Amino acid sequence: MKVSGEYQIFEAGDVVLQSGATFRSLRLAFKTYGTLNPAKDNVILYPTSFGAQHVDTEWLIGPGGILDSDRYFIIIPNLFGNGLSSSPSNTRDLLGDAPFPAISYHDAVAAQRRLLEEQFGIAKLALVYGWSMGGMQAYHWAALHPDMVERAAVVCGSARCSPYNHLFLDAVKAALMADPAFQNGRFVEKPVAGLRAMGRIYAGWAMSYEFYRDEVWREQGFASQEDYLAATWDTAFAHRDANNLLTQIAIWQGGDISRCDAFGGDLDRALASITAHMLLMPGQTDRYFDWRDNERELPKLINARSAALRPIPSVHGHRAGNPIRIPADRDFIKAHVSTLLQS
Image 1 (cartoon, rainbow, N blue to C red):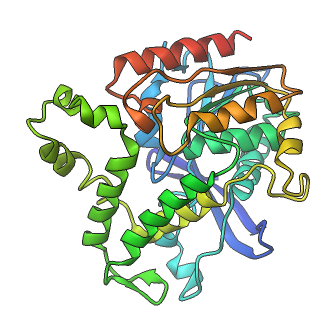
Image 2: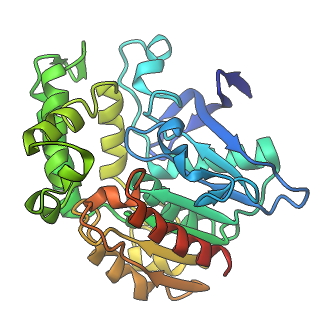
């Protein structure tokens, strides 16, 4: 293990990926919060979301927070492709001109499990909590390692990337790759126009019809919708590496808890493997992860110790699941996560 600034690096070595390719010197960046108790049973795993690094999502960790660092030992593993764990942006010296290997959620969970076991000797997780791509990882954890997962909170996520969600991501990719900086399968420089176009596509999908109809952006101090879009979404991805974003889009689009040898693509079988207490918390107006996906999944969690569907009653679309500055949505999530942790 290495320490790099405010986070640590788990050196996984040469890893055979789900695709069969070998990733040399795979690195998993992570950060911990709170204290691991002697029984090692107070662990919460909190994987990162699309494009995010641990600093972007740690806002809900703290004494008395949604994830209470006074009671729990919380680990944020950074998803591959986010610029801290192995990503196109930090493996050029290793890979040269070779393409970045295809990585799946299954690969991410396998590396995270090694981190828990080899670095900390952890055999049980009190909770796996995740939003968006983090929620998909939480679902993968519950299906792949039912022996370890006591509870899982899937916030604005699903067991499988839906065709509608896949299409949205195709639009994001098309916008990015239309930039002239995309050459021979990769970005050779920052695609300024492509990243801005991506932000505008995200703006239409991330927030709801009601958010724009009722001009909810005024609550954030903007005088017009265009001011809101220019300040919030035109620069939303400007600080991210575009090659990294393409890697994470591929992980997202390939997301499917059943896409592995254990389940052979049988989603019902994968859902039935889950034994944890499950909390499915979609955004009521989320367009990425429609709440109806969770509604279909719920009755198939036949072996879960408990399973609850609690849509977030919000006009903030996908952002309802990451409500840094939305008190009502934040309180809703905290209340239901607290109930889950008491189960």
